[in-house]
Image (cartoon, rainbow, N blue to C red; front, side, top):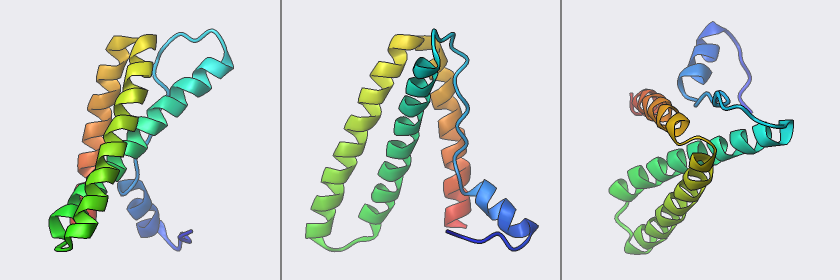
Length: 115
């Protein structure tokens, strides 16, 4: 784990991470809240993993590695859309806002990564 030495390191951490905030959905229990957050986390993680794999896919010359990455990206997409389907069953409108936020954060994070 990276040790934080000064404010610049804190900014680096903030700029290179995704922030998840629980959706504003009325939940019956704490278990439901945890389940919603877990679905969001699955969507965010699989989306980021897919993006990094896509970037590596574009740079690699090995056909064997490309095949591995294609399979991995397929698995990431499947995880994302399964979690999305489950999350949409709670509130189909809230998922639109979550995905919009996820896209914006991912673009900022990847711009920071590519800089």
